[in-house]
Image 1 (cartoon, rainbow, N blue to C red):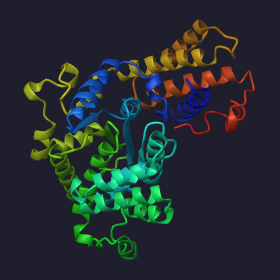
Image 2 (tube, rainbow, N blue to C red; image 1 turned 45 degrees about the vertical axis):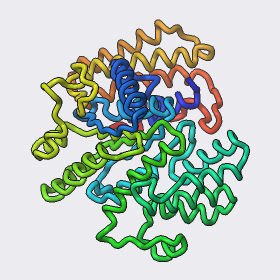
Image 3 (cartoon, rainbow, N blue to C red; image 1 turned 90 degrees about the vertical axis):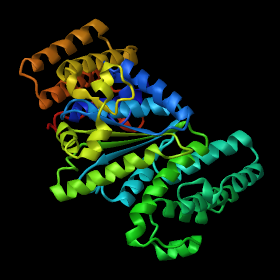
Length: 407
């Protein structure tokens, strides 16, 4: 594992006890069969047939939903899939489809792409295609011929994405940037729409246009050569903890998206919603959603039904899982830094086991689960404190009190 990546992950886990932005696949334990089943069923079978689907990852705080989601995203990128992770919070109104669309394109990322966002995605993808073909004229003719307005759910999306591609190939970055601005969700900007020859969208029509553009994005990702797209919505900050009228509106939006994606053609997409048990229970009170969340014959995902819409992490012993993850982190740590530390693998694993055991004795709680990760990662950073190793901008490995950000 790359040392820079590992260190960034260690700092995140030591300070917050939460899943790192990258590297979750290296620390995952207990879900190997789950991820392999999803990979085969969705990334290969479903995506190979242009079938779209959705999953709901459910569990209490501290059950590992975010880690699960990010691990899945990393596997998806390894399989040439585009990903977009959206952390839902109170500033993101899930009943506003234009806002949801904007968040998806703002956070989208291709495999090996460094920076997130639609503009970066297009630049990265087109540069790779140019390098592969080494014939920009052929590419222009191909895109002019192949991309038709009618190829996408939203004709306006098709027109603007085509203009963006041709502009980039022609070196017209100004027009390219304007196209990206529109595709980011600025569909009611009069000046921008005039410049691009697109009709301005009225406020009352924004939700419908945004939904069509979201699904057009999924179609484009497949068209441009990727296996598919995985979009993850992580409901981590009680964004659904609103009054009942607002919640009903959110669930209505969710239901319409679920229905629409099932019937989408020429696209390969998997939408994953990570949510707490209380939100899931509220969803089950709405008959239309309840029907879409149920498993046939009560055979759930962990009973071997890979097609079951719900992956319920509540059923797992998460405190034991936290300990296993801590041990896995320690193992990967040793393999990564064994040429630079003066301590055996057995000593590291023994100490990590002792730290985890002492915390478990206090009882099972979300804070204790996080503390296992924080304490073990802090211990690992202390091992590195013995040496001053320079890794780019990271400087000294351990120069601060790791508990400054104690929860």
